[in-house]
Length: 297
View 1 (cartoon, one colour):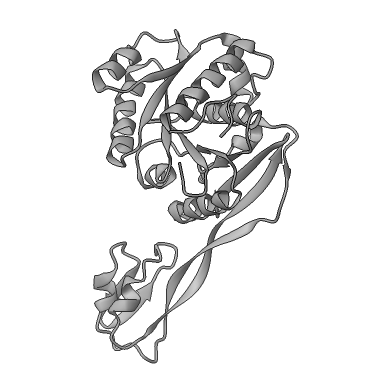
View 2 (tube, one colour):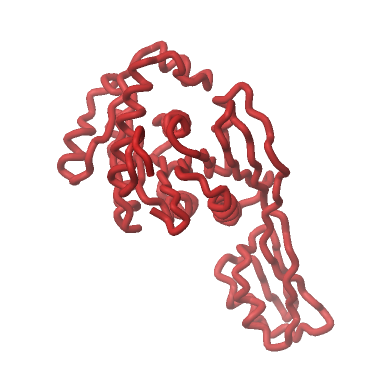
């Protein structure tokens, strides 16, 4: 549990299309019945968790996310090229003593500024996205969204995580980007527990292994929810047993549920789903060291 008394449950997956966002939304809804909860959409390239809530509305101003990028002061530049050598991302070129900077590629690390002996680079802010807060049918929600055409997803993710922490909710449910790249790593960082959503296909098992290794490498305990259980015949449970990962829930495949999910509709009237989500959340909270749903924190 974080120092602020918030339990952070990250919902992730090795691949897209497993039902990760659906699970995150339902876990947040069930959590909000018992404690102050915030659903945080960190899939900043394509945030869509708010689409599950028909009455969603903004509950505060959007906050711009920016990074500091270098700007060349030509009068001071000696053309030494040290800035280009220091840049690990190819944002700076130095050809024939002429320096060119592409701010859209820059990650804002500041290495070039520190490397310049002539102080010919100064840092200016560049907007890369925004964070927004919503009321999603009574559920507090926070969303990170990248600026169109930008590539600096991690800056937006970190800004959304910081804003979510300021809410001081007892429970924070993060909808993380799929996969195991930098955005996914930043999204699960600082979580108390990771819920990995998989489906019974060999493709999903392969990517589940990578996601499990990511969580293990960050020192975060994880459990698996098997979604669309019965739709395929790949042995997800057997894989989890071999890898020492607990299966903390199963969501049986039904065509009506699949159709609802495709239409971004919650399973509000599905008693079996509600009970299973309560059980999944209780297991995740217990593994994270928090009190389970129905008890006091």
